[in-house]
Amino acid sequence: MKTDAFIGLGSNLKAPAAQLARAVAELAALPTTTLVAQSPFYTSSPVGPQNQPDFVNGAAWISTELAPHALLDQLQAIEQAHGRERLQHWGPRTLDLDLLIFGNHELDDERLTVPHRELHNRDFALQPLLDLKPDLTLPDGTKIVTLRAQCPDNRLRKLPPPDYP
Image (cartoon, rainbow, N blue to C red; front, side, top):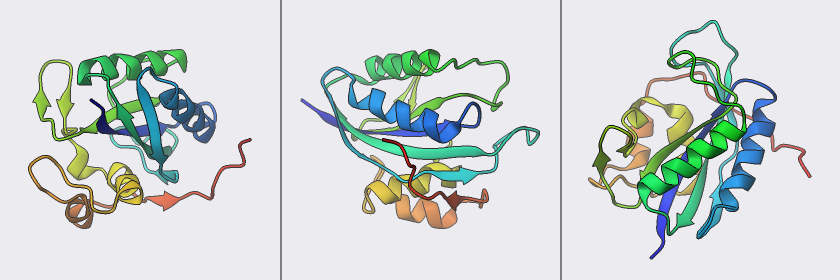
């Protein structure tokens, strides 16, 4: 059975918008997975250390038969293929893929927390989710639109559509 999952996308190194566009294509190619939609891209200030470039962020909505941890493994493999290095917490990165929401599942273990633990603080994740599905709710019934209205501002700016083939 397929589950709707929402993936947060982020990059601030090596042509960030191109990194995200390639990652969306790679998400669409995952086994037993269909890309439902992708959000527009946004720029935002970095969370954490400020001595790094602004981020480009977005989100993808997929429908998948993968289990949550199997999907996480696939997301991390895509990050690695993009040269992701984990040198500094909240530091610069070529690609960051976060499993934000996985159907109505709530998970919290040493590898994965779903819904994403910091989702309520991240306008750069909430706004793309609203672009994808304005009536989206968390498993506990909390509306994403409510979280977005209460979220701190992170200088979020929508980017024009990319000129990728």
